[in-house]
Length: 401
Image (cartoon, rainbow, N blue to C red; front, side):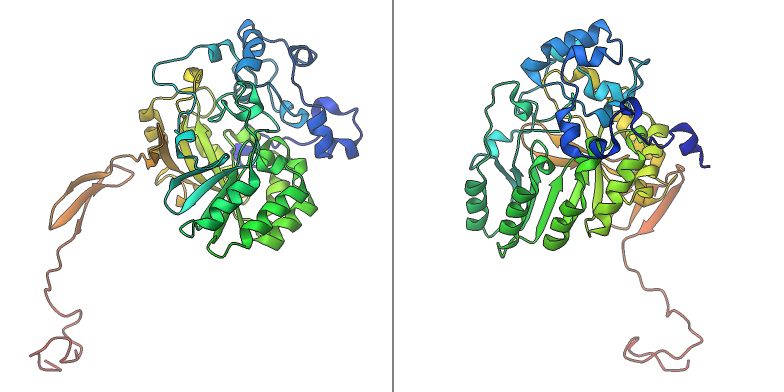
């Protein structure tokens, strides 16, 4: 068995819910209906810290508490610093707003020509189709909107969004997000995809979802058939820690892949969760084994009350440096900062370049060794002087000499 499997065993089964009939456990509607949403429900299974209790009491003013039974099984209930626990159980630190933090940290509202549509980049739009998620990440970029705990009163206007896309031929790429679009019914998902596919200039349809991670039971054969009919539909899932990679998630990813859905992963760099090179390496290796290509590693957005998750950017660069050259390139995500206020994604890379001149570029490899690559073309001689070279290649040269 590989070391990663010994360190992070593949979770399988119903955990604390062994008493539930398997048919119900595999029903995504049952999972949603039985989410843990109150302190009392959490305390049936674990002892909350004072910091967590304070966070839960404040949650309804910031971002609702909700955890599916399936995902709750992954929490170490004896460890307050469990990386899964930190992601979904509120903490009192969420009440603290730090300098630079914003309610709308990416300036989405300012780039919204119609409700629910963000048009920041020239050729693509973000289509927000719901404000609900199966579980709520405590570092959520759209905590102002998601769960409506802050009275944002978001109501998606599908027709307005679709008409805007139809009227703008420069839009070739549409990303469905929210909230989580896979919480919509099959009927609504099929409607949206069929309408988008009917727009001639829309070439590329994407879905951003954490449903496979929080609620893999939602990835049904019927849903996969919809994706197959309207594909290719590209999907970015959201896994932050190798313990989230379970047998159920692996099977959900296989169903999506076999339906022709290319899968990528977007992780957020979070303090106490994945700000460690070995944890990140274990995560990206396991993702590849599940047919998922690591895509982005995000520096956490400057959301209000998220300071306790914030990681120094230099740590993120160190993690990327620890991956580059030490594992396959397929496993190395692009580390980015989504520029505050709406500037878009900016790559943040380790500095490998030493110097660039008209003659050459001087750079270091992953081991720190220096190499030179010439930029100026300076002919020296034919490739092989012993062989005949056509005169038209080297004018004035006598063939065979």
